[in-house]
Image (cartoon, rainbow, N blue to C red; front, side):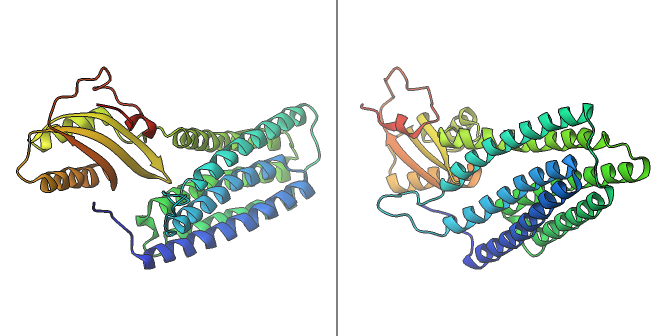
Length: 310
C-alpha cells in the first residue's frame, strides 16, 4: 500500500516555525492579560482570549507535526495523532466559557462604566498587533504555506489582527472622547470572533472524536467515481471513513469482475483513493459476488461498522 510522507527536513522546519509563532503569540497573550487587568480594559482581555485561540491553534499544529513523526506502537496502532483532537476539544469548551464570562462582564460594564486607562490600553494593543504581524510573517516565511497545519494556523493569526485593531480603536476613542462604554462594546465584537473560532473547533473536534467522516469527503460521490474510473468495479459498499489527526482512514468492500491480476487491480483502487481523495490508508476487501445484506448500500462514519459477516 502506497503512503505519502513529507520530507523530514520540511517537517522539522514547519515544527520550528510553528513553535516560534506559538512563543510570540503566547507571550503577548500574557502581556495583554496583564495590560487588561492594569488598564481595566475588557477589550484587551477579550483580545487576549482571541490570542488564546491562536496560541492553542499554533500549539495543536506544532503537536500534530511532532506526533506525526512518532511511529505507531503495538498499543497505539495509529500513533498519538488523536491527542491533538482531544486537546482541541478541551480548548474549545474553555474558550466558550471564557467568551460567556467576558460578554456577561461587558453587559454589566455597559450600564455601570468602569474607568479605563487609555494610554496603557493603546500601548498593549499596538504591541499585540505587532506580535500578530510577526507571528504571521514567521508562518509565511519559507515553504510553510504548503503545509495544511501551518496554513490553518496562519489564518487564525490573521483573524486575531482584527481583535488587536478593535482594541486600538477602543483606546483611541477613550483617549479622545473619554467615552468608556466603547470598551465593553468592542469586547463583545471581539468575543464574537472568539466564539466563531471556538464553535468551529468544537464541531471539528467532536466530529473527529465520534469518528465522523471528514466534511470535505462526499462518500456517495466517491462510490460513484470509483465505479466510473475503474471498469472492473461493479459496486462499492460498506464504506467507512474517519479521521486520525487530520489523516483520513478508510475501509470499504468492492465487488469486482474476477481479475486476471488481483494485486494490480487492488493497486489501481488504492492509487485512485490516494490521488483523488488523499486517502493514504485504505483497507479494501475485494468480492466477486453481489452483496446480499440489508445494509449493503448504506455507509456509516464509524470504523467499527466494518465488522460484518457474509
